[in-house]
Image 1 (cartoon, rainbow, N blue to C red):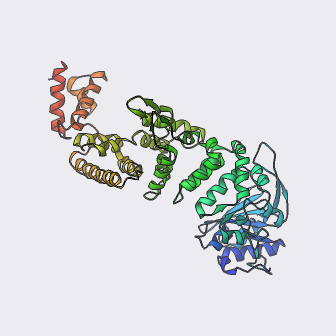
Image 2 (tube, rainbow, N blue to C red):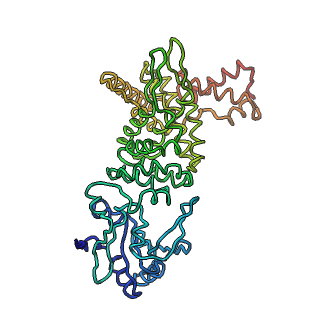
Image 3 (tube, rainbow, N blue to C red):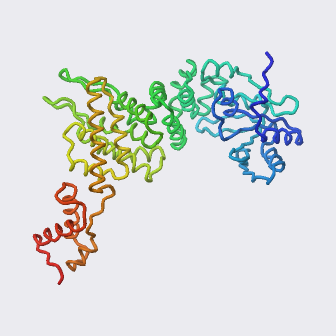
Length: 475
């Protein structure tokens, strides 16, 4: 069957410029991969374009740059034989067609010059091996040697070659298969899925950064549980995030069981993904119960307990981030904080909502109180409609109370109205334990509602507390 022509896909001037540049160099060139896939799927186009030259990709990039007004800078990556330039908001990457061979212990290939066919053979999936010709003679003609268009139509993820070879060569492709299936709503072809299970141990040679990048993309999808179930089914998740798979299963002792915290977690992640695009809050949802596996105990007459799982889980977050080479900055601290505080609003919502409890919640959560409430509402996965309604109504009351308390008491990012420097001056003290005691007493009095969050009330309270401590102000 003759391949179709898709000139409309190549309306951006960069393609015509590349065509002219390739003609001047007497090389064939093609746009390949995600841009073509997304055009055929009628998805929003990617902001990066991959162009293959049957020749030098670097030379083509430099020639293209010379034909563009203002001559954009060409970034050259000689090690990989690639070059990149920016055309408006689009990153255009040029690479020479190549064939690859791999060593057992590395995903970095030995690269040789090849044909377009060689280059398409080395692609991860048939839907990413689609190419559109940029030659003047057949501009826009689709080159589809593996029936990738058919796989797009049938929503199938399939490898161009034997999947065992494709996945063993570059094990990251196993995660990419699952990520694309999750993003696009596709099914991984059965032989390919079986090959992922067979080759799962190969994922150990992939760096934490690359694994995290794929996990982030799965978490960013509308229904992340699809990807995590596939990671679990293939055995990859046990290697990548054993803290999660440790939550799977239900034990029974003396007729008492607990819920399966792994599948509960996936429900929470899906719930939160309907309400926020913040990938770090989605990470908090994914990890919010990881402390339950190490703290699970069966207590006679009480049943299953998970005492302190929030604190344990919060501490586990840092080790997990370190292992996967994830950022150890404010993002990690935010996730850890959310995990540690994940039960606080739930406890509030189950009891009478007191001003004091809400003040403490707002004080401890600070600017993250809204994120914490979003996480805890997502944590409601009960199938009992009456309980579901009751919990959500109670959370609504907690939110209302937060607004009231915040407007009145201003305890978010709270600083005691009387500073340590002022206490030192009043009592002629050097930095000492007494200053900390007084500041803590003021904070507790405000959070408990004994005094308002105002300077004069705090000052008077501090003076009385100091008198009881035997501190005498300087005359």
